[in-house]
Length: 85
Image 1 (spheres, rainbow, N blue to C red):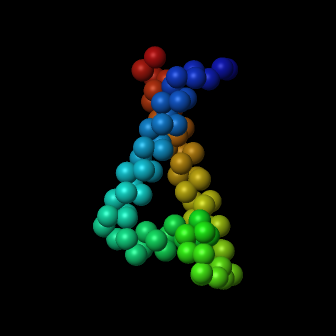
Image 2 (image 1 turned 180 degrees about the vertical axis):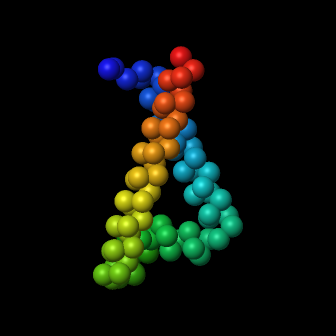
Image 3 (image 1 turned 30 degrees about the horizontal axis):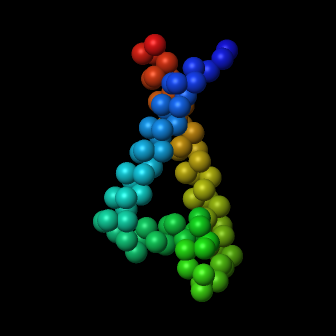
């Protein structure tokens, strides 16, 4: 089965839009927590900070969970868009 490129792109764009809104809300509402969460993924946020073993594990778990959620939402949206065809 070939993917409908437009529906696939709509699902990708919508998924990233959801993440953008969540990210912006976190930064606006709880900036310190947002900085901590993002520092576990993007090690270059604070170049003076040293990456410790627990933070590597936290970052790994965070990336795996976010990837799972992203793929799930993406697939759900793609299936919804396919039903509207």
